[in-house]
Amino acid sequence: MRTPFIAGNWKMNRSIGESIQLAKLLKVKLADVSQVDIAVCPQFLALPEVAKVLAGSNIHVGAQNCHGNPSGAFTGEVAAEMVADAGATHVILGHSERRQIFGETNQGVRARLAGALRAGLHPIVCVGETLAEREAGATIDIVSDQVKGALEGFDAQALRHLTLAYEPVWAIGTGKTASPEQAQEVHASIRSLIASLYGQDFAHALRIQYGGSVKPGNVAELMACTDIDGALVGGAALDAESFSNIVHF
Ligand code: 13P
Figure (cartoon, rainbow, N blue to C red):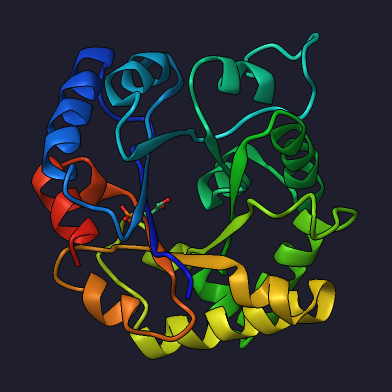
């Protein structure tokens, strides 16, 4: 059985002080949880403070991105090693906002993934189609290309701490959730692709999160799907009560 994994992506929200407050509330509200893996991903500057608050708790801390090189002339970037040094154990990679707004490509995601693995971070690699791609019937092709493009060249051993997140772009921040059937169909196709690349055992153990307008009211029906193993939560992760309710699905 796969342990559910629910992560909050705080995106570019909350000051350092507000992030500390949110982390303190979550630490209390989620202290009873032992059957679900939990992570929160604050903005970079708040990350070391949040990591201090959550040290020794059952909540992991992740970054929202990292660079593939360990150091160098990459103005504005943060290396995977620096993310780990700041107290993170996880990192989100290839989020659709990175792909759409900042031009990250599958190849770029792969380079960042190489850094994350080198630094010992647990990566959460995001994939997902746009509305136009879904309407054109290209969902499975697009998502498969993103999975293959990001993971190419890494073996199962290197990817043992990998989590994938299926986040349909049209469901992010829109209030429109994929139906459990829509999400399950894509999750199942991702798992069978992973099985063809890395074998059944690896595919069976891999956790695939769903992301896109996950809320306390819809998390249970999503989590009930065979191939949905968790959630990557944006807006609803910014409120301690609602994130706690999601984790307690
Ligand atoms: P929302 O939950 O706000 O739709 O965001 C989802 C997301 O992008 C998580 O990474």
